[in-house]
Image (cartoon, rainbow, N blue to C red; front, side, top):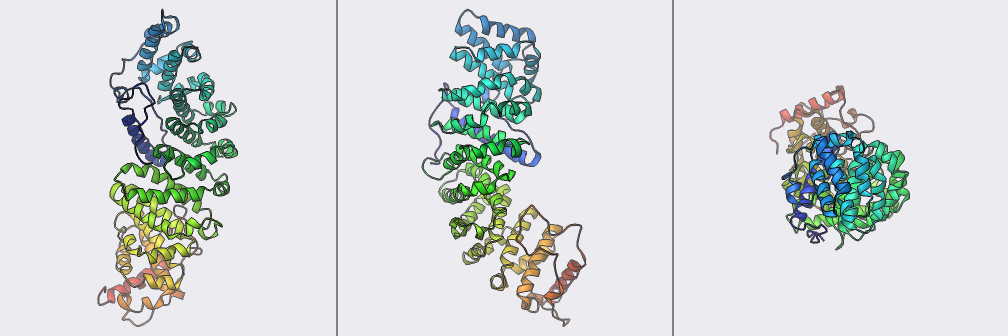
Length: 519
């Protein structure tokens, strides 16, 4: 199921799959940038590798040349000449200057829409490709100018040509993400039912395009109020989850698109209980287990494109519901999910270190309310592999320490297995770091260990020769810090160290200075 797609759905078969792979790589980079900087991403379908690479593009067209090509496309002596004129116009529209000239010319868009709706299939296709070039423009005014064509693009989604449907979907996706006016225009005209129909297509390329268009629609600022309720009322959700089910029919490209769509729905928090009712948690867990299995069999670095949204979806769903309280979700109490996550963490460490925080965030939310999964961490001897991640970055270190806090807060039996061992030397190193978040989380973990294992401070590396034993009851961290942990929603320290933390830090450091050895 993870093999590359073999079918060629375009007239130019050579290099098409390479173009798709390159497009997915570019989209992954854009998604990362969008998460960090709120960028807008678009997709561009081109007929040949040369065009996709930007080679062989026509020169910038002036107003006179555009008028000439439009006139030939309308009134050429034969269909071949008319098609050739549209091809020349399309290549010219690859330039922003030509796009701006085109949209300000009176009647230009009306002529292009007329060609889009004519009864000549080749002319329709070339007109749609011209619109697709315009939809990829960096200027929002260009997207607004394409508004008259969007109704026809929507109608053509019910056509029979998979190539044409795919082109219309990507064009709509590019326009939707750019223009609120386009979204306002398309929603009452039925874009959600149209996507619900297209998602049942047998063509993989169409399914991937549906996922892209849906994900673009879901990123709109008004999506939680005006878009997502309609999607949840349609059959889209059920079909999305079916297309994400592990098995021989799973297509990675399709699954990636719908995993991101699901991620945007979950982040909206419109009705996540409905997602769980429809089996979203079960599907995501099974997909995570399947990804871990595939990682052990292949070196394909493209797997992280699917792993990232799947992990994010699981993390966000778990942030809203206690793991042990999810009635029939037995998968969440299965230690295989912890083992699978560590396999993926190892994969990220080797191939994509930037995704380590995503995996650790999921591990945090899995262990925050689940003694069962905390037990799995200990019984599978996974504490030491966690500790090996402490030196990678401050973000990773804070996440690792928070997961360890989740384990320690479960009580004396858990702390007894954490203490003593390699944890103590690692904690001493983190306390000495300059990052306040790292030091704060280290101190919180130490406080939990001392709370449940008070003899730990009065023996071994924390032995104080000054005489007085440390009384954990005399030190209290801020209220609520022993409750469930939700990473990214709170910080241990705000505004620096208070008196209690200074007292605790001095007590610990005093013990360290008087210890004979680290042991």
